[in-house]
Image 1: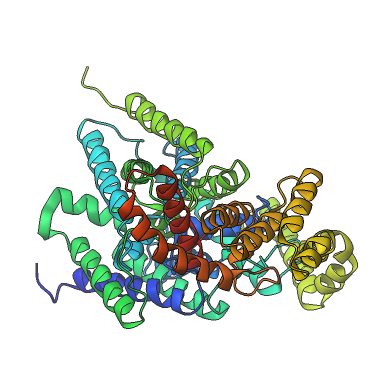
Image 2: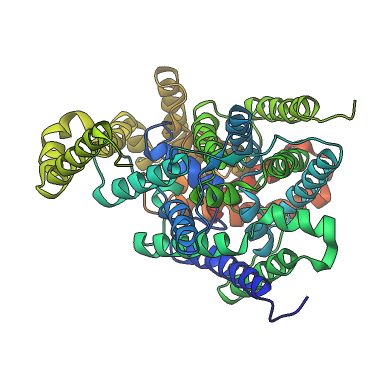
Length: 354
Length: 181
């Protein structure tokens, strides 16, 4: 692999930008270790739209809008925007719900997992092991013929619907109509300046679209190809930059106890991320990647995104989400339901040689 | 996409709707309408009013407790809190006041339990900018608690109550550290 390789350079740039902005957005106002957290942002945004009533978790996160629209603009600019879909739509929607359930149990998406680790949060190690186990389990499934089926080009411009929805959200963010709620207290009230967040999201969306960089994708390719995959180097660049910036900004606080947005129920953290890793491999990417793909016109990923919004509302309304106090019983049951779903889907979607 | 009369009709309809939308957006009709609908739709305003009303409400109902505290009648204040907790079960502010009184009385472990109960019910108490914030009190409590509990745990490693207190202190420490919760 040559350093002058364009793809490698794009991946490295994406990794560096994700690591740097992941830390800096927290410095600029986002909650601690949550400079970028797709699942938290989705919970906040579904709350802002009135889908749940947790008054401390309601904010239309501009980063989320930036991810999708940045990806759309990059895909259009490089002639990669294609409406496609038709691969197991409803299971993908449900997958989106369970992605958020898994993230809510761990308290964070795979990007936040690494941001937590790079800030010294040792409780996230259980999540990392779970994510690796989940990606490995997903790969075993793929190797044994489990797949949701091919998508195909779609007529009717279905790929524009999700970018259109996010364009509408951008309108809501700028015009702030009365029915959109913005938290006055709690983590929803903590955010970086809007234009900065939007710009950072747009940049990351475009870079991720060009590079195909995502966390579970990096782990998946590393398990498959080892050092030969450029995504591994992107992930290492992300980790290196995030550690350096956390050290430089004084956010690096190594330890197991008293970490922001973390709990000590390691087995459930492991299982939460196992669910996320496993589902991510089956549907072709982590929550972040689903947003990017939806921006490129992938209607299947768009359904995952809608499922994630539904999940964001459910985890708050039904009290599934873990807190620093631990994982609630409802959350444990929901996680087990998620594992039932992924195991059942693996059985039902498996292509067997007759 | 412009082959026959039906296509042309669709385009005409599309342009008509886009034009109307543009008119609403740029002529300021949306803002005017938002102002008219404010009474029914401005949830942010409703939430802010509810928040301010709650602050006034808890200050009012717990005023007798505050008065007893100021007079140094801490036991009576605790009794009054018990009385109020029957009328307002689950209200976090009572737990906060109980924690503060227990702290004044030197009952550190019991105070920690009360603060944990309050913060679990309402995270506003660890928000630095909330009118009900007890961020600084809880920060000092955690600092002191962790400092004092370590030697006690070393002396009595099998004491489950001490281990529980330490766990509760870690919980408060984690909430003070922030994060997305």
